Amino acid sequence: MVTRSWRVAAAQYPIEALDGWDAYATKLSRWVSDAAAGGAALAVFPEYAAMELASLDPETMGELQGSIETVSGLLPRVDALHTALARQHGMWLLAGSAPRKLDDGRFVNTARLFSPDGRAGYQDKLMMTRFEREEWGIVGGQDINLFVTPLGRLAVLICYDSEFPLLARAAVEAGAEVLLVPSCTETLHGYWRVRLGSQARALEGQCYAVHCPTVGDVDWSPAMDHNRGAAGIYAPPDRHAGQGFAMPEDGVLAIGEESRAQWVFADLDLGQIATLRADGGVLNARDWSEQPGAEPLPHVTIVDLT
Image 1 (cartoon, rainbow, N blue to C red):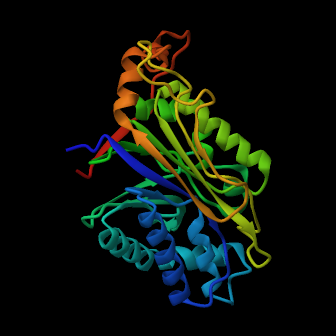
Image 2: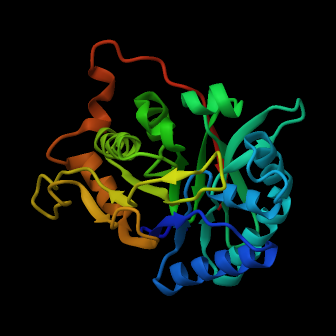
Image 3: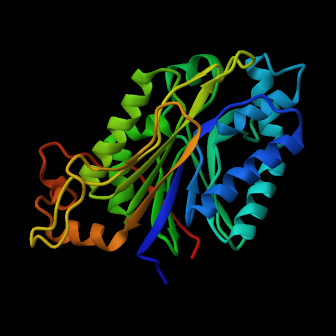
């Protein structure tokens, strides 16, 4: 059974040096507990939030490739902690993405979605930024995954992915109602690119978009030295044609204070998304295919977590 109305929490998550694994576990547990206390059914952490774990190895924390290896090696332990916290609080968690080492030795940037019953799905970032391609050596994933959950149909567009409309469109065609957009941007230019991409994807797909960034400056990490942005939860800026309800005129349901560590909460109503797609002031989702030059869409894999 799908819960049509629920609360989401988007993290403005600070990257910090950690004294050890217990410090990380305590920090993450506190953050998840605070999201649960705020009534969230789903808590979303940012892109590369796991990179703070590089500080657990003082010998490699100042090296880019060493940091990537360290964090990738810790992923099983990180995922076990998220699984336990999702069970403990009876909520869904999108873990902060992390480098994940493939069998061929290459790395992808992977976000993992954890359910309260212990199951999980993952989404690899598809589009690599210049920094990831040219300095990190991270490669893009292959497929978009659509997660069918009791909260509705969710898709994940990691940071730069949100700036490419066909990726979101493929997810929307497959039924996505909520797009989760974890990000990591070192400048406000980058933040605004992802924010504008998120809002545009919400408009085009007549869906919600949940954007959450890393925040804070760290002098020990060559990967995560500067982090700017504000978490935001966006809706299509439209109203029911029958005047039954209206989304905010600017499409902003909630927005955080730039670069402050905090949770940002908003209540989502998937029934309103269905109504707008059927009888909104405009019908962007329906009319997409009528635009000249509409392209074939990427493949979407359905991941059933109900």
